[in-house]
Image 1 (cartoon, rainbow, N blue to C red):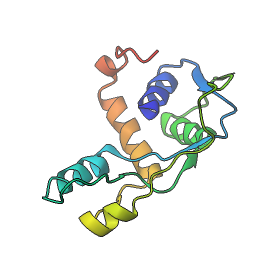
Image 2: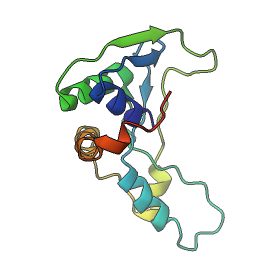
Image 3: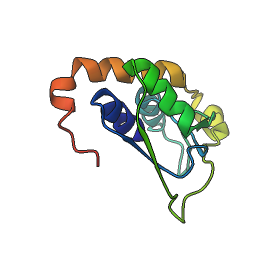
Length: 133
């Protein structure tokens, strides 16, 4: 969800709001990979909790830089204090997804950001109106 916000804000020349110092890392996963994993999870496995994710956390500032590259220009970054409940890093342990579902993410972060940016440009006329604040 944050990637869509960053993409929209940068393409529309709006400031990018960053809570924290931008060094926190998150596990970004392309929606197609999540959809594929969800479908694989429909098989009869009993009651299992299975994490789907990229298993490769990326720094927030680095991700914003990827979006800037795809959008063709730098963004104005506005840093605000981190939320007190925020954590410095999150990522999914996908070992169970590998074992039970044979699932691996296929779309690397750079490719996913490029696909998102291309999609946004193709749909910019209406996508710019989506409220993301």
